[in-house]
Image (cartoon, rainbow, N blue to C red; front, top):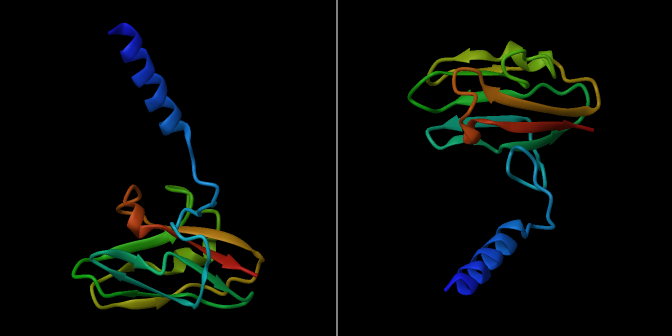
Length: 127
């Protein structure tokens, strides 16, 4: 009985340690979408991983029935890409642009009022 339990535990541990060889980003996608618009609905932000050219502004559109406060990572400092903080609080039905994202880098974003909600997070890759 103990030997069987030990075998089961070892098998479970080995299965849990196995991982995917495909890297993912905080936005959940491996390939960024070429767009400068992120739409928020009750299901979350979409797309959650975008790619833009330097100098582009990103538009956040709130199609949810409640407000969202979109800001740059990390929470609560919001210092990674301050240009995203210009979006700020969006009431239902409202949209707003970020500042010009000029520096080549990857910016994370989240809903400041719901920082732990994964479907309201993502990345913007500027290149």
